[in-house]
Structures are given as C-alpha cells and as structure tokens.
Image (cartoon, rainbow, N blue to C red; front, side, top):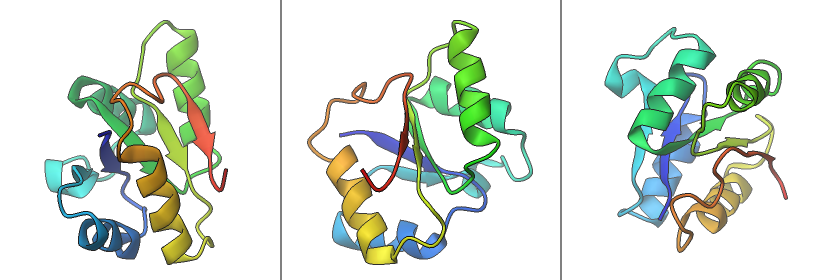
Length: 116
C-alpha cells in the first residue's frame, strides 16, 4: 500500500472519505506535521524522507517543483494531482485505485494527473 500526504489546500472531505472507505490507509495532512505554509520543494523533500506520495490540487507549482526535483537527481515517491472540481466520490475512488494493493514505489518519480 502506498503512503499518502495531502498538501495544505487539499480537500479535507476527500481525506475523511478516504479514511472512512479504507481505515487502514496511511494518510497524513501536512498541517498535522507542522508543514503549514511550507514551500512545495520542502514538502516534496519531507514526503520523500517519509516515503509518501503527495496529494494536491495545485496544477501550477507542485508539478513544476516535482519535475525540478527529479531533474536534479532527487527521487520522490510520486505526486497525484486532482482537479479541485472533481467530485469527491470520484476522487476517493481514483486515489484508492492508485494506492491500495500497489507497491509503495509504484509511482516513484512520477506526477499523475487524475482522472486517469
């Protein structure tokens, strides 16, 4: 199973729905680990050290920071970008599909845009 971290502006209803649907899912909010208002490169670094795929709605700065990180030779567990207008149920389904019964390094160094 993939470990997840949601960025500061990620929809909390999605996080709560994920945990309701799959209670053993390992998901952390950046707010819960003291990373509020932290720049994207630092959040990606923290996610890499913790082995967590980053969940974000930010299509402009997070992918750029992720691609820069990988081009600098710094690995990362991956990033899942969801449109902020995606229906909550669909977002939950897509995230669970990509994180449960998947090897922890399945999305290493990748930025995936949902829906697939």
